[in-house]
Every structure is written in C-alpha cells, then in structure tokens.
Image 1 (tube, rainbow, N blue to C red):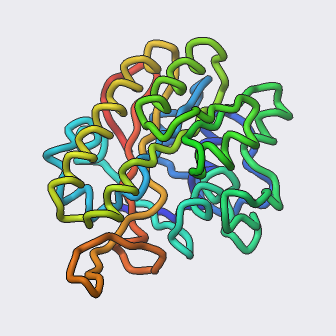
Image 2: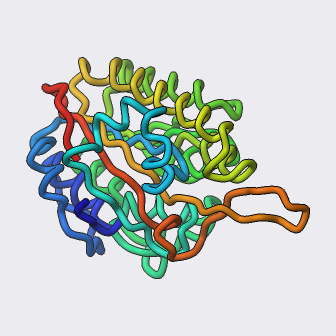
Length: 266
C-alpha cells in the first residue's frame, strides 16, 4: 500500500477544490486522490478517531463501507508526532507539523494559515464538526466558518450535524471527527469485541453520510488521525494507547468517493 505523510492532506484538499494550499504547507499532493476528486466543488473529510491501519485490517469485515474505499487502491497516511488527535487534525488543515502550526491541545490557536483561511479568502465556506470536549468540536469548529459543535457526546449527532450543514449551508469544505472509536479503543484495546462493534457503528455512520452528501455534489474522504496499540495495565486489563511513532499508532488508512461516481479510490 502506497504511503503518504499526513502533511499531504491539506495540499491535496486544496488541489481538489482548485485553491492554493496553506502558505506553509510542505506535504505532497496525493495524485491518486486528485485524479478522482480534482475539480470537486465541495469536499468532506470524515475521520473516525484512532482507526489505524492495523486496526482496520483486523476488523475490515466489520467495516464494509470503508473496506470498499480502501481495498485494492488504498493508501496509508503516516501521522506526525506525537500521534495524538489535536496535533494531527491540525496537520490535516495546515499541511505542517506541530512545530509550525503550534497546536498541541484542542484549546490552542493555530499559529499558521489553515484551509479555513484559504477558502475564506476565496469566498468559499468551511465547517468543522465534532463533540464537546473533543478536537472536532473545540478546535475545528472554532476556526471554520460554520461551527458544527454538537451539544452532547454522541457521534450520531455529529453525523446528523454534518448532513444538516451540507444540505443547508453547502460549504466547500467540511471536516468532522467521530470520537467514539477512540474512546472504545482506549477502554478495551484493538482486539476486543467492543472495539469491533464500535467500528461497525462508525462504518454505518460513514455510509449514511455518503448517502446524504454524494447527491449534494460532495466528494468524501475517510481517514483517521492516528491508530492505537495494545497495552496491559498493572491490574492485568487490556487497553489501547497511542502517541508513539510505531506503525500501529502512526499508520492510518485513507479512502474516498467522487461526487459524481460511486466507485472507490484512495
């Protein structure tokens, strides 16, 4: 599977939408994505938190929608260090690492130009969506034109908010975090049945999002911010953790669908 850095997301989204990349962006353009999504008027990036490549490979039978996007022509993205959520979502919208964008926690402000800024300059709107107390609701929603922060910790509400914004506002760019997968992985570890069930629910949300956004002219990209690896606590219970540069933490799958086609690519 071909591999790109997480810094490639912002330049690629910009190229697909026909705008310049954020000023400091250093990542390459993902040519495979551009071939499918180039010229799109609208693009949504939906990220089920912590669904790393190793986790997806283990449970792909439980994620048929994402499996259809990734298998055959998928690519992997390598998260920047540290492999934590606010750092890597910030990289997705800036094209640089934390040493430049300055985000280490979701309460931080961006210290460089973002996709939100570029699209605003072009007169094209953006939206950031997520739960309260999570990066999507506290960082992305704060800097986008449309604040998609929901009122409760519920990924179903986030999905509904993304669809509502797409239907009513039609921004050029939507980015959303589905945070529940990260919570379940931390609690039970990558190999648990509870994790498989959470991944299946996330897959259903992603499929429902596509069913709503595709007819509205959106292309859709599915990726994650980081993965997780298994750890055993002193009490003998298995949990999940991340933050390191190991492949389990750093490599994530990426897939997409174009706005005028239902065939997959990544």
